[in-house]
Length: 402
Image (cartoon, rainbow, N blue to C red; front, side, top):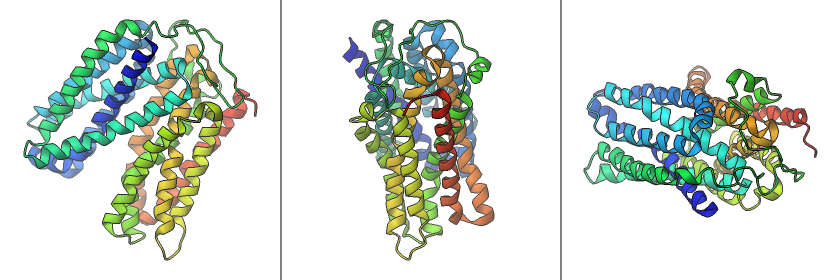
């Protein structure tokens, strides 16, 4: 039963990643078919992000009321409906309408699944699961590419992914009885921090934790800023790295695109590799080491030398450094703030993450329009320093040893 549910969760994480790359992959064709400017992609993604933030903040109340299994199944069903709606949308405004359930479905399931894994499974699974999210995010552009090159059109790509989500919804509905039977009261296996301390707090819910109360828990605001900073630097790098290499370093566009993609591959591969030693190293060390590695990568990107090798290598190093930070922050939440608070706080963390991912890239675009894209390493360095500072302050505040 334990292994069966874990397999279902792994598949669910792939499904979380599947829709995330579709809009970006298909928009160059979609905007022409829909008769809107390229810039309108930002409207769609903002609606999705807003829905995701709202559902993330609501995830704690929903999960306590109906259970993580039901929340997961309903959320994936909403996403499936939205994707099929995208497939049949003949206008941009219809697309915007379907973007609402698209976002609402994504946020609640993300928060619910992350909290469930943080409570019931070891750190290695948190890293591997987020690696599987990367697998899903990497698959969907290939689906879009296949649909476009075979003459099926972008709508068929959304339909294919939507049908996949429908199949997963059926599997999740069937699996609902399993969710309450896997380690319902036992502490997690493995270590929760570098000292081997395992939280022994009961898993029985003590009632709804309002957002205002969750924000008053010691250290929560620190980790929200750290999470915001991490997701801001990740999304900014994904969007702007290639442009920086071409405009500021005069790298050949094809080479720049290849190495910018290695940043994402570094995150996915890094999370897979981190899973093999995450339980021995501990979450705090993974977060600290991750930020330091990203900082090293940013320094390499900024090195003013004639050759582009350090900058290109820096992107790979930064991707590997990013790999453990997100999973480790989530996995450490029950220990840092208490198991009864973890669902509410993870929901707020997801909202902070999506806010950072949504706001930072256009913010850098605005800054670069004033001073130039050469400022990217400095922009990223500020975010790295902010994330590292907040996470280290949290470590001292919550009183972890070592």
